[in-house]
Image: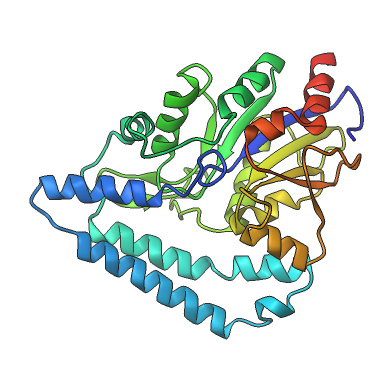
Amino acid sequence: MYRGSSERIAVILDFDGTITTKDTISTLANIGLSSQKDQGIELSRAWASILSKYSEDYSNHIKAYRPVKEERSTLEEELKYYRSLREIELKSFARVSNSGLFKGIEDWEKHGHDAVKEGQVIVRKGFQEFVTSLADCGIVWGVVSVNFSSDFIRGVLKATVGDKKAKVSILANSILSGGFIVGLEIEERASRPVMATSGAKFSATKRLLYTWGISSEQEQQTLLYIGDSGTDIECLTANGVTGVVMSDDGQSDLMKRLKQIGIYVGNIQIDQGNQEQMYWARDFDEIVGSPVFKQLTQIHQKE
């Protein structure tokens, strides 16, 4: 499956729905609503309006977009569709920023930590063992996410795997004290556009590999990318990537879209013997116990 013991191996994960069992946007929103309510500001209607406007924009876009879902049959067509969602996502992020929902909230790391301890955020089964296996083998890993807050993600990781193992690269958006959501800090760029689409995550993934000294053009490297939704499709299907789709039953929207465009996705418990193969898993226990992961860790240990 892998090319040899001289390979550089790295792992990048999505956060919402991949590390966690479900999207955490409602958790972050509830933190904001509660915090503002403590200040005498009621924003429940404003939040409901944000959700409603996003749903309306999304629905209108789908109705107008061509080719329609049923007629898209290639990866290129599917990537163009997901990239086309950028303006809708940016408008929604702007509405959240302008609403004041997150104004004055600074300790997002603590909120992430507390959300795990209080059961508001549930991490997928086997994640701790997965991270331990990576640490034992010295495999570098990180997180790329369109989540509102990288600090919130850090807090979730610390509560789950401990402070030491949570010292990893997290490329995600950030919430400033004024409540505005911004994207990654890039030296040559003054502005910080939010990361909201598959294309943005793909760019962030390449940037993360670069910081690790791994070029996406190198032949002797293996990237294991794990994600669950349409924002992960570019990373999952990129050249040289072994992609794993996290899905509770193998019938998620992303799984159906991949099947529609002719990409076979086998369960990771069965090694198909092809590095370009894409797999799906229910949780991290399935990944850790798979021939794919065992071979990856064995190769890294030989280096």
